[in-house]
Amino acid sequence: MKKALLIALAWLLLTPLLYAAPPQIVLISGEYEYSSSNSLPAFKQLLETNYQFHCTYLQWASTNDIPGIEALDRADLAILFMRRTTLPQEQLAHVKKFVAAGKPVIGLRTASHAFENWKEWDHEVLGGNYHMHYGNQLPATARVNPKNAAHPILKNVAREFETAGSLYKTSPLADHTTLLLIGSVEGQEPEPLAWTHEVNGARVFYTSLGHPKDFENPSFRNVLVNAVFWCLGKTPPDRATQKITADELEKLWRAKQVVVLDVRRPGEFAAGHIPGAVNLSVEDKSFEEKARKLDPDKTYVVHCAHGVRSAKAAEKLRALNFPSVLDCSEGFATWEKAAKPVEK
View 1 (cartoon, rainbow, N blue to C red):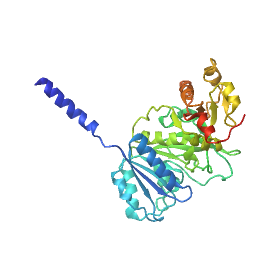
View 2 (tube, rainbow, N blue to C red):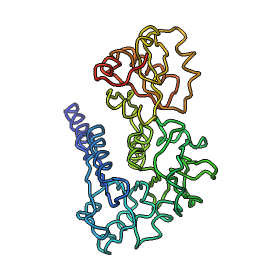
View 3 (cartoon, rainbow, N blue to C red):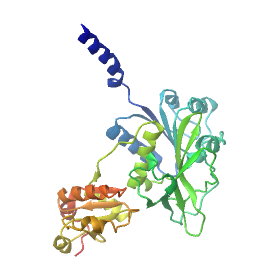
């Protein structure tokens, strides 16, 4: 009898955990400059497929209408990529109710000026101070704020990476913000690029990044995923090194967003390699010593011939605390077979 009671008690305690509903996330696209109608659905799929969140995607029908916005009433987190919308009061009320309830918010790029009829949104909710931007022709560099480098949102994020789109002018930030990323362009003072804020007891994250090419950057994607977990009060997962295909590597290589690290033997490298790749054989006894001389602020894609040695090399680099490492597990054989660029 005693054993039966203990089993029943354990079942009562575990049942809510076993059947707990996944967090509900609402993603809203309400702008036309940065193709968020493409990037947000892709991010939604990533969250659902890789992390089992339940997501609802909403898209504006016009600057004055977001069909289905009442989904916020049931949401645990809102991700907004909106620009200068003038919502009717009954729709805007759902957003204000969500914030007043102390629920977490993530704002992307133009979300700093999301509402024409709620100008206080940027300062009071996001903690920002948007006042225009530098020229589109000025490439911006993102750097991790060393004072907050241990913040969970910065997990698996390169200490420095290039961004797309203009750099927003966002300083000074409001009180109760934590600066995570700093952006800079040549000849100008640095600007806050990503930070957290607290409003009504809720966690808020904002970044002025969000250009379509930013979404191709592994560090930016890691920032967003980590921000989702942090906003929901969860610990970002300890993930194995992300594996990518030869086609994905080609996109990153052509955009010059990564350093390609060929970990095959020198003879294999000399016979043919990806243009611009760095050769560092994982079979070399001094691999770790030589790897320590690499710039840890870069994102590295390791590859071998077929994926076995690259997995070993990626593990070694992660053990050396390189924050951003990808493994092209298809290897050089797939790259070469697809007739992609090769040099000798």
